Every structure is written in C-alpha cells, then in structure tokens.
Length: 253
Image 1 (cartoon, helix red, strand yellow):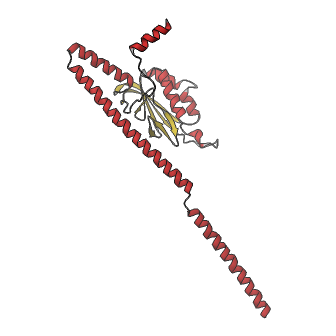
Image 2 (cartoon, one colour):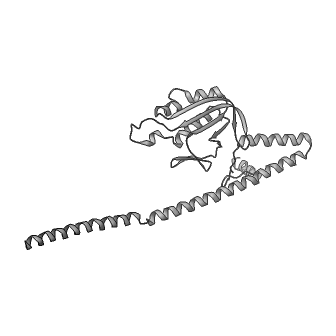
C-alpha cells in the first residue's frame, strides 16, 4: 500500500513538472513575441526621417514655385507699361511659352483613359500580374504622345517631359506625389487619332485587357487639364550665351 502511494506521488510530481514546463515555455514565447525588435524600430525611424526630408523638399519647391509665378506676373506688369503693340507681343509670347511648358491651364477636345486593377481570379499565382504598374501607365502615355497629344495629365497632375512616373509600393509616384488606382489619364489632341492609336489590335489597351486590367477610353469634347504646379530645377543644363555660340562656330569652322 505504501509503495503504491509513493508511486502515485511520483506520477503527480511528474505531471506537475510537465505542466510547469509548458507554462514556462508559453511565457517565454509571449515575452519574445512582445519584445521590441530594434531593427524594426531603426527602420521606422529611418523612414520617418526620409518622410520629413521629403516634406521639407516639397515645401521648398512650392515656395520656389510661388516666387517664379510672382516673377512671371512682374514681367506681365512690365509689359503692360510698354507701348501697346510691343506689350501685346510680349504677353502673347509669354502665354505661348507657358502653354508649351505646361504652366497654364488648357482646355480642348481629347480622350480620357481610366485604368483599374483587375478583379479577375488569380490563375497565375502572381498577384502583381493583375495590378497596374508604372510601365503600363507609361505605355498609355507614350502611345498618346505618339498620336499627337498636346497636353497630358495623370490623376490631375500635369505631365511634362521631366515628369517621373514610378511604382512606390502599392501606389504610383508622379511629380513627387503619391497617387493610386483608378488612374485617370487625360489627353488633349485629335480625338479620333488618339482613340484609334489606343484601341488598335494588339495595341496597349488590347494587351492590358488580356491581363483583365480594366480599361475605359472615352472621347471628351471639353477636357480641362490644369497647369503644372511644381517646379523645374535644372542643375546641369545651362543656357548657351552668345560667347558660347561664337566659340562653337569657331571650333566647327
């Protein structure tokens, strides 16, 4: 009887030890999972620093843009004080250059292209095949340019020759600003030419639709495309002076 009692006691002690071991293991796992990962913290701090720098740069560029707009306005006022014929010629030239540079609102006939991510079932195993990428947007914009588009915008942002369009995670960055689907591309120009260029067989729209990307192309009689509201900062390209031109002609001769 005594031996049996001792045996039962050993069994209970073993059970208690096992339970304590399990509890300690669970406690250790909980502490480990809740511990702050120093690498993630450092990464978050780095991203916050980069975000602050981007915000400061954006503020600087907006301030520079306001200064340039004031400078253009001063030119207009100076031209208005000149003789009638000379001032009107200068004002017309300023307006023409602003339109070419994308610094003024424009309106006219054109097409509107709306791109949206595919909602079809994923049969390839790669979800990115069904999402719109910067290369898809650039393909549409380049097709419109080739078809004679005179002004372009993406989600309200004016497209210039210096405009960058690139993927940034799940969104696209254009002119330094983040935007997401649906992507609306407006183009002013010959409606029929641009529409046919996009809708041709095996063209850009046809290829996108093969991946079930949603594409809508609509002809619009009065499209409004807003002016570029950023700044263009040339660091390396310089305007040639008369002396530079004379030197180039001398070397060529």
